[in-house]
Image (cartoon, rainbow, N blue to C red; front, side, top):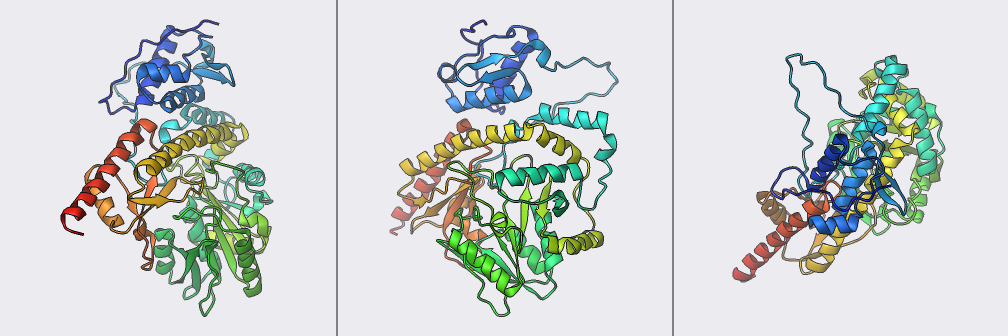
Amino acid sequence: MTQLPWLALSIERGSKTPIFEQICTAIRTQVVSGDLTAGTKMPPTRAFATELGVSRSTVVTAYEQLVAEGYLSSLRGSGYTVCVLGEVELSRTAPYDGVTSEPVDIRAPVPFETGMPDMRLFPYRQWAKAVARICRTNPQAMLVGGDAFGNFELRKSIAAHLSEWRGIDASAHQIMVTAGSMDALEICMRSVASTGDVIGVEDPGYPPLHHFAQAQGLVPHYLKIDDDGATLPSSTPLPDLVVLTPSHQYPLGGAMTPNRRLEFINWANAHGAWITEDDYDSEFRYAGRPIPALAGFDQLSRTIYVGSFSKIFSNALRLGYVVVPEALIDRFQDTVKRFGQKASYMPQQALAEFMSSGEFYRHLRRVRRSYGDRRKLLLDRLEREFSQFGFFKDHQAGMQIVFHLNPGFRDEDIASLARQRGLIIRPLSSMFARDGGANGLMLGFCAYTEDELIPAIDVLKDCFEELAAGRSQGGH
């Protein structure tokens, strides 16, 4: 095994190309050209980061991306080495046919947009291999779904995933593939509630859910959030359906206590009501074991479980799923017959292949590690430099942090000024259907490398200081 002293690599700080991608491109080029031969040991991440003048996590992100693409291999305690050339899929020159094609540029998202996965970490080559295998062995599965609930192989993979990760014991025939989590929630409402019915929704909560419920003629009953989670319905008449985010409340971030979960289950049993559990980002927990799903606790007696691949895998894929209690399967089938199946059949068999091969879980582990590093950077800076402006609660989960503002600051003012400086920040007050007196900022961190987060945090701090100075000069 050869030892590589240093790579001849320079970083263009002003380039629109992210630094980690510049590192990836340079290493790919040297592997393909033969300058980096099989078995070459890459520089240690910490030393390489120091040499380049970048953060260590940037180098780790680049190395992990190259591992995902097959250019590097990694063994615990042994660092990273170049794969043998045969393991790397080299591009082949095709005959010129008069049509040119430019590579798709992956847009770097704008801090601090929430709910955005980092698509630059997506394992494109592994996904392409899964698609290619299906095209060779079972091409009809790309266009023919078979069942109204979706591709059966994918439903079996989802059932296995939920059993292992969320403690939910469900069979494949209970699982319905949907076009994302919002489509899943719409199907739940259409299947369980009728025009004029009351529906319990969290406040603060997910605004599109509130809007759809009202558009369907449902009457929202807003469930306040306290330290134990969503409060039980108290309206008259009582709702036939409540929609909850018990494992990680959206947007505040807390987890519902076991006692409150039991209270909701008892309430649903007593009143013949249904609970829809929206578990949209449960995989992103950064300390301890995942919190068991309410549907597992309830054994799918009165709980409909909704999940999504958008936050783990790709927003563009638009695939989610519903785990339907046995008693409701006929109703959900009728809903699909009436309104049609929106989920595309095209990627479903390939996603089943991707999950069964283990690539899905390797990707999940990689992004969770990267997101955890980015989250730590953001929390450290907020704690050290922003305490005079507000505070946060560390729930050790999710894709965004809520920074609660001290008196004297308005979240809409901060968000507006930040937008002028090139940031995207959602004010917490916009998430309330009623005036909840909330005042805070929702700060997404997953889609941005540390080298992108650091200047964005500096800009946010400047916004606070500018508004604070304006208040001082105004005599407030």
